[in-house]
Each structure stands twice: as C-alpha cells, then as structure tokens.
Length: 212
Length: 212
Ligand code: NI
Image (cartoon, rainbow over the protein chains, first blue to last red):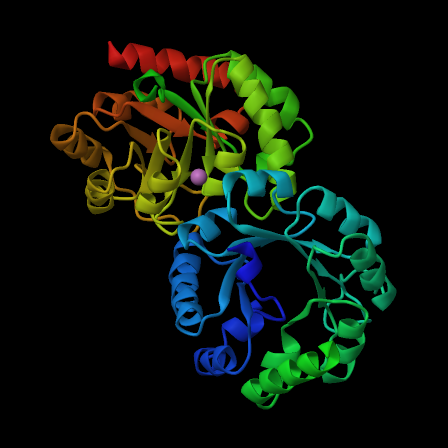
C-alpha cells in the first residue's frame, strides 16, 4: 500500500485559505488537475468541526484518487481512516504515532539535515523538508536549508521520499526535483494563484519534465 | 476495570494553574490527600509538550493510585495509555473516540438533561454535568442546569456515573451528592484555595458524609 502513494504534488491546506468561501469550489478543481496527495491542516478548530470538514475533504480526495493525510492530529487521522498522518518536530513523537497507526504512512517535517537524518532513523515514511528557500509568509520559519540538503539526504537514504516545502513556486520546482526531491508540497503557490487549477496543472507538468 | 475507577473527587487541570510554578508542588499534595481521579487538560500546547507534561502527571497519578484521564485529545490519551479520555460536545464524536480506545473509560461533558440523555444513549461511560450552579469564572459557560437534572438522570440511568461540575465549592458539595451525583469535578475549589491539599481533604470528607 505504502509504495502506491504518490507524493509528487502534495497540496496542503492552511486556515486562511480553508476558511475562504471559494475554497470548496477551488479544491475540487485542484484535486482533478494533478494533485497527487492532500494534507488537511486545521489549526485552532474544535474536533467536531475538523471531523466534519476533514470527512468532506477525504471524500473529495477518494473521488479523485488523491491520497489523504491529516496534519498533527493522530486521532483525527484515525477517525477519518486517512492514508497517513503528518507530524512536526513539536507534535506527538513520531514513534508514538507510528505505533498507534500501524500500516499507515507517517510523515515528518524537518527543517535541516540533522532533523532529516534523525527522522528517517526514527522511521519517518517520508520527510517534508523545508523551507528550502527563503519564505516571506512565515515569520517564525526556520532558516532556509538549500537544495544541497535534499541531495545529501537522498544519497544516504534513497528509499525515503523527500518532499520539498516552503517558498517553492513554478520557477523553483525544477531545481528541487533535479536535486533529488521526490515531490513538492505547496500551499500558496496553488491557493494564492489567480487560477489554482491552472497552477496545479503547470506545477505537475514542470515536475514531470524535471524528472525526465 | 471500569467499575474499579472511583470518580468521587475528580480534579481537573486548567492552563492557568498548570503553568504556575507552584503547580508541581501543589499537585502531588492533592493526589495524596484524597483526589480519586485526575484529568489532564492543556489547551493550546503542542503535542510534544503535552506528551512530556502528561506523562509526568500520569506517573504521579499512578504512584498515588489516582485514575488518569486526558481531556479532548484521544491520541494523547492513547499515547499515555490513560485510563480514559474526556470529550466535550464539540470534540471528536463520542462514538468515534469509543471505537478507537476500546476498554477505556470515555466521559462526556453535558450541560443539561438533553445532552445528558443523548450522551448516555451514545455510550458515555460517565457524564461531567454542569454547570450546576452559576459560575463567575467562565464567561462562555452554559446556563446552570440545577441539581434537579442530576436527580432525573440518575433516576432514569442509575448505572451511569454523573459527576457534577461548575461552581461547586465546599458549601454546595452536599447538595449535589444528595441529589444523586456520584462525584464532583473541581478546579478552582482546589487550585484556588489557600491550601489545595486541605481543600481536597475537606471536600472528600464532605462527600463521604453526604453519601452516608
Ligand atoms: Ni488504535
């Protein structure tokens, strides 16, 4: 099951976009146009609301054959029978999450080489690595790690998918893919675009070309 | 296992008290002096911190033979192997939590008769019912339901423990216990007292007398 999951173009939500009225029109267009994996991230909502909203999104993902992940909340991931859960360095420990969600894909955020190596050794099924480039949106973001970290991690652990995240727009996709990233995770490059569906399509095309 | 749990004097944490420096001195005194069950409640903390703090509290509870519950977060309850999880009306649905934490005690907050009945029928192992009396501390609290609701619920479902919560001080304990409450849940009546350990001892004595 695990190997069937395609993390090439991994779309994340973010409260700001999620709570916009147009979100529900936009999201289905994105899922249809090339998104391969989706992560539901809803900070500061109550469990009942996350359960309803997460279920609605999971059904859309299933309809379009997109893998479905839940951010941070293992319990919500279990409740929704997600394909996996994505945790950060400050969430419940990776080992604990893996133990309680057997057979599922547990991803980990890493901001640099050390966190990446430690995470892989602890059993992370994939890494969300970043920010690779400077980002303007997150004030509390870690310093950018650069594409060389991707190359180093993939040389040492070729079997663990590395998904590049943070400040990746159309122009930078080729660079991270050529450095060895298995995919990219995006929020604003899609939801902030004039046409999110077109952004998805073009990102996907660029990734495919860069992988050739 | 379930019947062995004593919810007579159920102490809850609250971020305000939990983050005070003296908390760790106070809590062990309370657990020694008559608290029968404890609930770890930490809103707005990250998972890793809740895991560390919750583990430390669980060890203290085990040491003193106090049942240990986690508020809201099923995943944290699982991670800590708590005796149970307590959910509110806006948390993950009770049925979902019960399904994923079999053999454990799942409690539910109810603010009135209807929520109580619905919760019991949905399988709540106990109810945290309240506020029974007007409370000054919580601005968003539901209207007080009064002691008669305890009597009615216990008449219809004598086997489901009803724990009274909200605005219960030393003076009001006897009233709720005589109305049929199996126990009381307290925060400020203990942590706000000049001597929390003494408050625990006195509340326990009052409950025992009222039950005679
Ligand atoms: Ni489980």
